[in-house]
Image 1 (tube, rainbow over the protein chains, first blue to last red):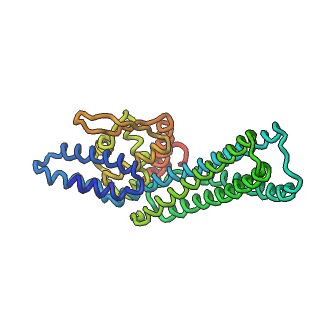
Image 2 (cartoon, rainbow over the protein chains, first blue to last red):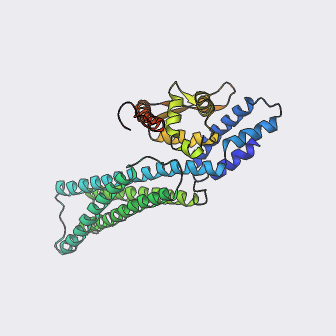
Image 3 (cartoon, each protein chain N blue to C red):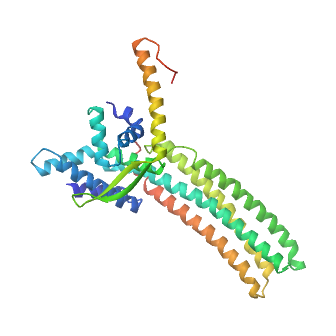
Length: 229
Length: 114
């Protein structure tokens, strides 16, 4: 009886495997202790009592889903902010390196470079503003105790802000890629290592955020079937 | 007591049950039952999402221990923030309770309004 209940609960919590494992262990300890403390001699009946008193596993999974998705969304918000800081740092390091090695852009590439630079600046500062807005929105309130429709709307809004910030950041990183390619040209030399590494850092920052957003969206989608109480 | 009414105060109830010292989920529920004179009738499982939520909010901390039975057990304890949050919620509740009590008795409540 207890094993079946734990399986049902773990299955309902499959949107978050680490949470599912932890909750399963906690609940098993609870149910076994509850059975041990039940004065009824019939063990099966005691298990039935313990399970009935614990509650519907799907309702509990919905309550855990709020906590899990709130934690994931906060992680995405922080990751967006860190990615923006990472891209900014990489960008500044690259520009400083160009100064050190006195690396200038070819005359013919300069006009295109100026246009790309304006796109880059607009995209980066838009990412920074929207990203900070997303972080503020995500951290502004307490986690609700039930997964009501308003809670899902808030989650969608938070993710939408994070997606927008990441979209701007992707444009900024792509613009940085074009600018770097214009500077480096076809001839790579030892001094090209720093710009290439800084570009790799930017790409990794954006990649991590995209992965976290997709992962959170997938988890949120798999909680759709849980009861909204 | 009504489940919906209780749910609104579940965080405060759980924090209060942990005020005497660290405890695992089952002991928290037993403490709630004991202190409330078995007046609260929530599904026992409801306490666990609340424990996780309070831990995420930084009001509780938790760790695994091995119980005498040999089973792994998660033990929760109030953090300093949790202590402060409980004190704040207790003060608000006492004001609210005094105000409602006075209203129901038809007499003005003692102290500040809630």
